Length: 177
Image (tube, rainbow, N blue to C red; front, side):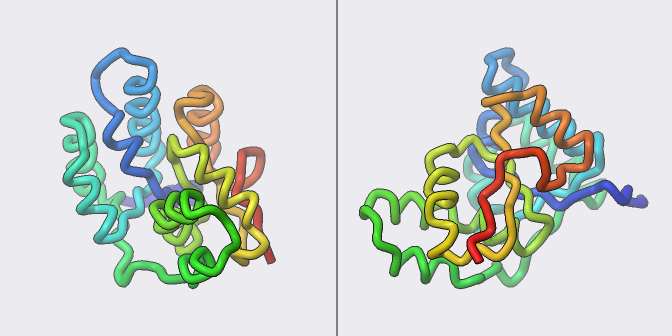
């Protein structure tokens, strides 16, 4: 299968995979529609081995079937070895609260995976986005990373995916260099 030139490698947080279901609950519906739009536009989901295990543990029935379809279409990218940009080391040296440090360390893999691919994350995490944005300079984030929350504005998220999921016109963790 030929992947279109507008196809991007997108890091999808486990919280989106866990929330996506056939339920009509607004969060479940938004997350399901995002996953459906990813596959319809032939974007590729990016997973590290750690993320893959996390997804296996927390996926919904819908996400399970979606992953099978993604794999059958070869729209699944496993990063090996896991990206190590040094951002985690810089988080440990950062002057911040222990709570902020723990939150950033919990989700730094999303940022590092995005930096190793096409700089795009779909996540419901808003606090860590603010932390990465606030500390982008001392963390020396090399490039902007689109960080799109499907629950905040589903229409904008779907439009972003359909337009090619670029790092322009959306909320980004800014480059800190």
